[in-house]
Image (cartoon, rainbow, N blue to C red; front, side):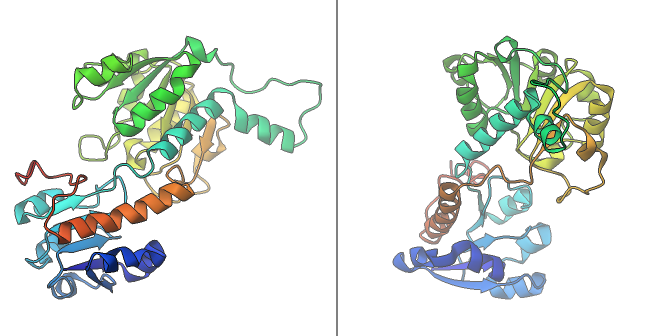
Length: 328
């Protein structure tokens, strides 16, 4: 039983002293750098699992040896893997969906509160020496949080955790997620939206928690923004390309969008001269919502244990294509 790490230098840093997890389970491993499909075809021979730090498109997946039974992606998102091709090859694709739920949810709430209360603008104003009177109110006027409705596009693990955290503020909730049973919405006192437009029309705060695919690419664009309430606060801690950044920038400029909190970007790092960075109503962070000491350990441990499961002929709990492969 062997695991191939596709990205040797990253694997050394990622796994650190945790390679012993493989040793303790009698699983061997090799580390290689990407060097084309022919090299991958040779490197993957006699390996049951591939832990990848790089995209695996159609050509790479078709190059994998017949011994490969599963691919492990060391993240929640797996849009860099051609799952359709993996399905045709009978190869499991596994992500790590639950390693940073608390961290991303907390970061989302932080961005919401910072955006609502103009925190970053106050911080900059004070540091620039512009605080001249006993007290100061600056930036966009805002309502009491308990009068607001928060909308979710996608209501999986992270969205539900955000709702739990925000519930104490007296916020109302509406969510769109066609893949969840009615019981999830009922148990959490969340209004179920039948269409995305319902969420856009009712939300004072809108946060997205969807996977990135052809259907969700630039989900938040000029058209969807036009359907939103005036002065809406929007937050993205999921995937950068869920936002059409130019449309969001224009929405902020026009005032249709009141404020935005953004942690993930379609192109990273975001260009320092991008006009959105000059907007006082935008709170930005550098794709760091996932991080904590505990989350980092969970990610590495669960990635390695998923590879062990694959090598032992098991179907991991986090196999995203088990239904397509007839394994559900």
